[in-house]
Amino acid sequence: MWGDNRVELIFRRSFDAYLNLCCEASGPRTMKPSIFHPLRLILYAVLSAADLALTYALIRQGEGEVYESNPIAEAWLSSYGWAGLAVFKLVIVLIVAALAVFVSLSRPRTGGHILTFACLAVAGVVAYSVHLSFSEDLKAKYIASPIAENVGPRQALLGFVPVNGVIDSKRPR
Image 1: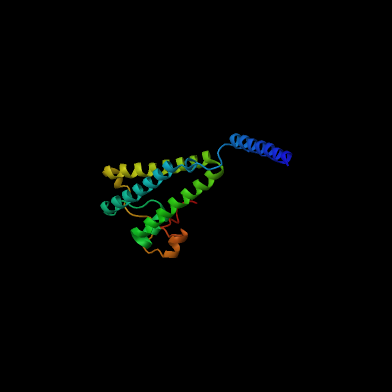
Image 2 (image 1 turned 90 degrees about the horizontal axis):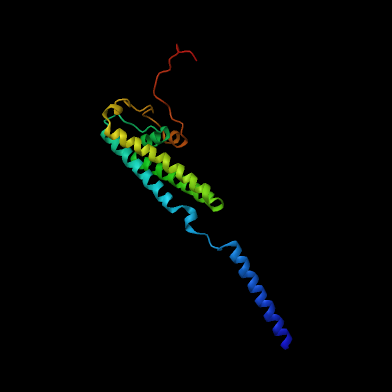
């Protein structure tokens, strides 16, 4: 009986030492929240909200000279109003965030690169909007929206939107 306890004790100590060695070599077993890049996610959401706010301010103050240049966002704005545009931009933010988090589960560095690119893209749009808000000369170039006024919700949802304009049949193709 004394021999069985001693063997069990030796086996238990050896097994515990093996487990400790394995855990130390492979690192901690829990995921760190930093692999999801929370600061970049917050920055992307803030930049997207700034884009929406600047778009609202430019279109309201532009008196028809400024319009949403993204054709799908313009279709949502035409069909559903400002609430529709806000929902559209929120859905885009959620898609980009979900994509970045999903990629970060297996490749945290690539997920960070996706968010960096998204932040830079939206920051460029925000910078351009700020530039337009202070530039009277550039506002005059954007006289009217190229999107047709009467766009149905189904067309806007799918991104198929008729464009205003005349096709020049004399122009070479």
